[in-house]
Image 1: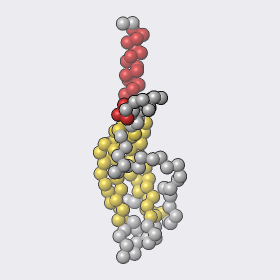
Image 2: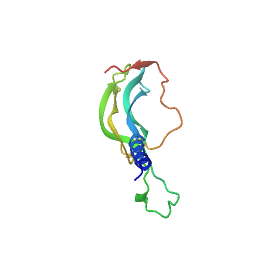
Image 3: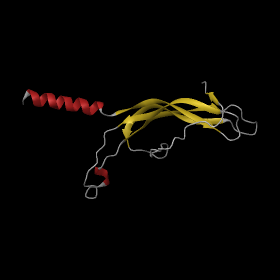
Image 4: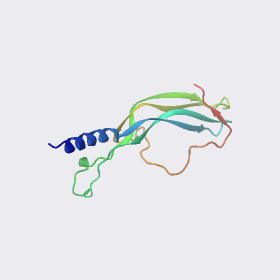
Length: 134
């Protein structure tokens, strides 16, 4: 084998491993309830990044298992609970949210993930904001 071919092969393998940049990323969730006086800003981690996918022009000719549309999704996560301030006594002030511990490239599981990218900005407060201190 020529040295050029070996170097090309090694660079291709290295790039293939680094091209999947799926990892926990810092994210701020804004949570509010109609009955409560404040909006709570919660700092957490979510899975975000790039995953290698395969998509063929001959989709109709191949089995669905031959196509790979991987997304950056949770490998391991835990839930934490925060208290929304300014809630009346008759309202439950608790909000549970996921924290990404580790991530992987894989199929999107709609049981715990939003698999559609929403282009509308919905993560904002309409009430005075408080920062969640854990």
